Amino acid sequence: MAITLDDLVLSVIAAFIGLGVTLPVTYLVVDRLIERNEKKRLEPIEVTAKERLRSKLGVGSLTTLLITLSIDARSSMEEKRALPKEVSQVYITKLKALQSDLEMLLGVYNDVLSVEVEHLTGNIISQIEHLQEDLQYLIEIHPRHTTQTHVDHIEHVILTTVQLTKRELDVVGEGNEQIKALEEWLLEQEQKHIHPKPEEAIEVSGKHRVWSGGGRLSKLVRVADAGEIGDGKSKVVRAEGRTLAIFRVKDQFFALNNACLHRGGPLGEGNLEGYRVVCPWHGWSYDVRTGAFEIIPTLKVKSYPARREGDSILVELDE
Ligand code: FES
Image (cartoon, rainbow, N blue to C red; front, side, top):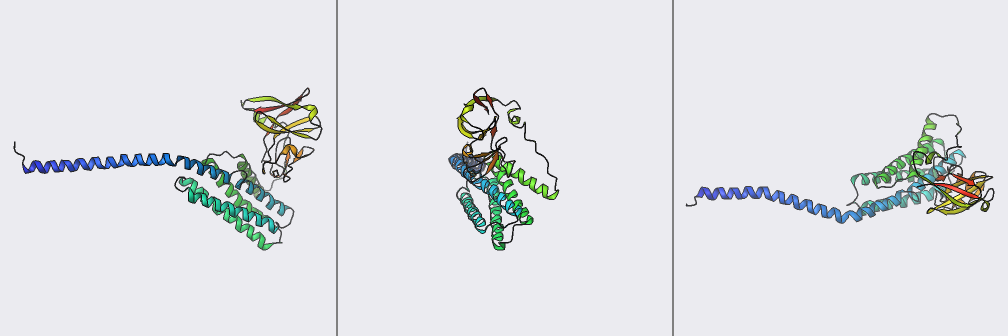
């Protein structure tokens, strides 16, 4: 049978239709494969990026800086004095360094960071800039003392920074109790200022065991001989992979994590005055009964129930 012109035209049309369907599908499949391989290749870089962000935002860096800044600003206001110029300058220098570190991380890792992380980091940088301007202002008005209005403003900027940081630490996978406690404290300060409340007594006794309830497992560990620690003294011990500070006040024993919230100073080597221990490195003080930091009581070093049984000091450790 002879091939007509119509047959040829039809075959050409069929070929085009075939190409029209298969080509986009092929491109789609190839695109997906490239995308998947690219994602795999970038995974370790993403892990590094998150790790670096965590270390810049967490305790020891931005979080610690925000804690100390809020304490310094508030104390200067309460003591009716100016924040010393050199102190403001040190904060500005540290904040500037942090700002450029964060900007650098954003630049280097922009291929692997999610839009949310980029957005949060960008906003944190703006707040850090804002704080530098506020501190610069305090330097300019020196020696006028820090007023309630200054502190309210600075604490508000810190609170915004804290909330952004908390969100970002959640996103990059870091639980951070300190930043949550700082947020709680700042909110409390803000609340007090709007609706001043009379001082309320805080119940301290009997709180030790709260954390060990709720079905969580705990383990009783012997950490020392009672005779090793005299009244008003302390000792650093290792137990189940943890370093603990054990304190004795008369016949009561208390156990805290040994690391100070500020820069990890050894609390077990600090001075014990009544129930108050003072960190030997820079003087932050804590209530050994609760682990509460004196200035911001919602910030706490972890405490463990401790007791004496015969000659032994026992500590209840959670697992
Ligand atoms: S490490 Fe600075 S006060 Fe404890």
